[in-house]
Image 1 (spheres, rainbow, N blue to C red):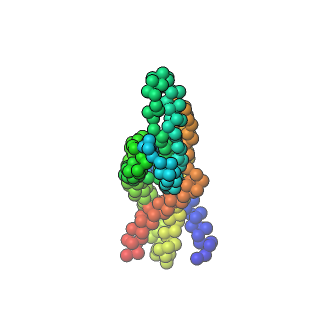
Image 2 (cartoon, rainbow, N blue to C red):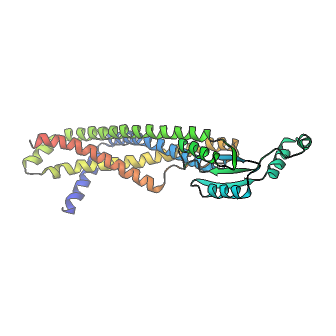
Image 3 (cartoon, rainbow, N blue to C red):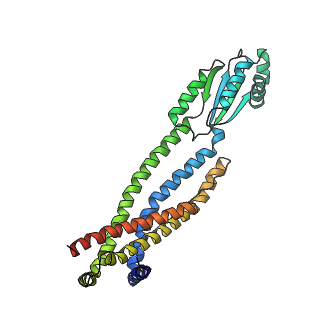
Length: 301
């Protein structure tokens, strides 16, 4: 197809948008807000997953060993733990080390000495990647290790991991539903906007069709309008998400400081932002296509 025709159609689209700057700005802003809502929610969930991944040192399982467990059984268990997928670190705590740690923090040195022997067993402290397993798999993994002949009992503090994973799964499902609904809303908003542009240029379209203009020739400027408005709306939505996360960073820093850590929110990477702009432009193009196609079906019927 002639490049000159496409360039001329693009100029016509820009000219049409420039003739109604307020209407164009309101449409772009409405689309940007509609797009920013699900994108912002998905980004929040992504940051929660990153936060969960940063808490690996708090996702621990303690395996307390039988006092009569043989060194071979202990070594075999340690090797099996280290080779398990999702295990970040396996730390062996001897009975003497456990006793020394307990005396250091409890202050019950005299009471322990009266027992005459060390009552604490050796143990393995296993740190897990909390994103590697779903809640049900975590429980199965703990049960599997608890059945090892060298293990007397298994203790975990992973209930918070299961709860947070359930919340993330629910949030992702809700975000997906919201994204689909708002994407449909964006298409309808753009379709209605283009329909108004078509109504304002109805006479021009009718004359063009009478002198032999093709459907593609008539449709192209309107498609470009939707494409351009969608792309600009994507850029604005990107800016809204980045600004919102920048605004939220200060209270997040304060909250993280209370837990003795730090966490930096990540809004959108350049690749994600570019994908957002392209997807928004395609939504604008689709809304325009539906609106123009419906009108041309009547014009060329």
